[in-house]
Length: 227
Image 1 (cartoon, rainbow, N blue to C red):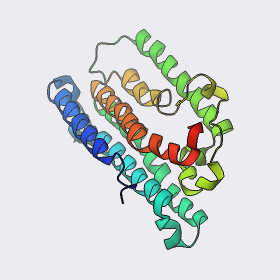
Image 2 (image 1 turned 180 degrees about the horizontal axis):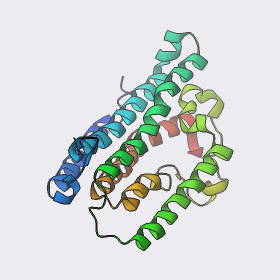
Image 3 (image 1 turned 90 degrees about the vertical axis):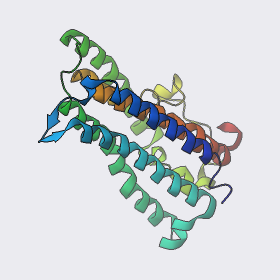
Image 4 (image 1 turned 60 degrees about the vertical axis):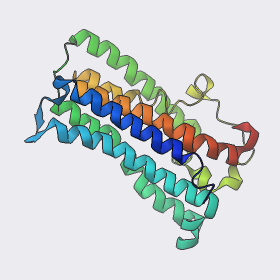
């Protein structure tokens, strides 16, 4: 239990601070509250876009830590292969729900920023290009299964391995959490939505909470000195 809860007090504290900060920004930006989609107000779409990453990352903590330190899921399902397939069945849909929820929010809250079309296109190209390079590097070098946390299910296969240094990883160590999250900012820029930009900021800040309180400590346990 001690290993399961390692740094999770900091995780909870950071989440509370971020939620308060995002609520404060939401309350004091009336333009972020404007708009409607399918008859549903922006408030619903905003808090949905905040809830999705919280659920996603808590899901990852429970399954990653549980499997890494106790093998509870593989023991319950009879094999590591079944356990990882079960985990992926929830992980990837929730991962996809992060940009989808922000797209819906962007549409509901569209055209609430005074941002010219030229600026939107220019910034959007930069953001999308960074995301595309990251995705190419993940698919061709890093691997989608590793991105989903396969190392927590098969730590013996990753012990002592060097970290990926091809593609974007040659220049950015943690490209998924830095450049990869550009895609969430992209939609707020394109639709000129302050609510979507707030949600993107929360997503981006909270994934770094995940890195420092969950993934980095776990990588030190899995990879040893190479992490």
